[in-house]
Amino acid sequence: MANSKHYLFLISSTLLLLIMVGCGGSSADNQGVDLVFNDDDATGTATTECDAPVTELSSAFLEFVAAPNVTVILSEDGCTVSLESAGKPDHTSSYWDAGNASGLYVEAEDPDLFDQQRSPGDIEDYINDFDLTVSVAPELAATSSATPLGAIGIAISGAPIFNDSEGNGDVSLGVIQGFDRNGAHTGPQTYHYHLEPKAISYDDDSLVGIMADGFFIYGRRSYETGEYPTDLDESNGHVGLTLHSETTDGEYHYHISNEQYLNGDYYLIFPGNFQGTPSDIN
Image 1 (cartoon, helix red, strand yellow):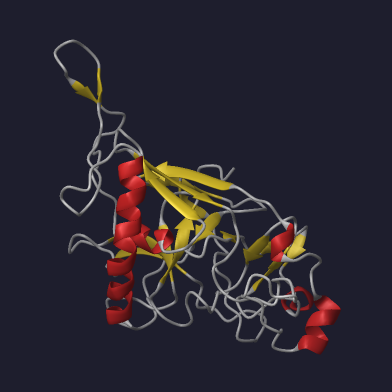
Image 2 (tube, rainbow, N blue to C red; image 1 turned 180 degrees about the vertical axis):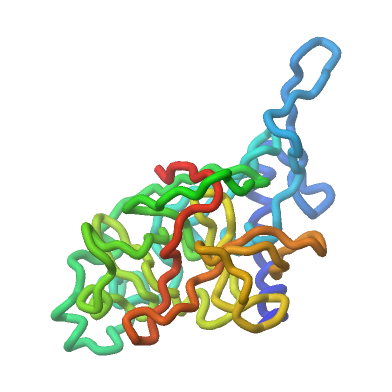
């Protein structure tokens, strides 16, 4: 698993560099983007809007760049990173049009049941623009905050992550029976995940996406131990090492909930609160 992920980084790093160079950076060191600082006086004193600006992004963002419809941009002051996505996943689904113009349509695992519970609309029907800007160094907030309806994160596939609610209620078994094999369906006006997306992560330590508070979310297992973490907080988060950790101290990140949902092979992506300060996903 680790070797395949490192191979993905090598392939996608070139794409990230091309994006960054187009935004004013330089690929001279083949590692990141050079910052362009604004001068606040004739002496050329550099000004920034944060305490610890960066000159290159975490390698985790390379996995987002691998998706064909996600753009990742580091701000000129090195303080924030923006993700822009059209919301269409780069993997197969029974929610692509059955005409298969996308080349990504697959039949539902149980087409008879799926036809009865299927949400209306195909992925091709929607024109979306999910924009999220977060700090390059997100911090835990003094108090947690509840997640809203709608997009609360962006997966590395480019599709949005939703919480454990469906309309005014919880994600019920009747709703789940209309999900594709990635724990996702359409509506309102977008394709989105509620459950563990098997095309991205299935009972492993893979990067799943980024939440609106800037913290990454990973699969159910720990990268450090290969086991299920036992020190998670109420949002399934903790400080620890990931595949993308740049120091031995690790960093705070979330995991998909390992609590079996509705007595089936269902695992909610994010049933808790944000532990950081969330930004809007527009």
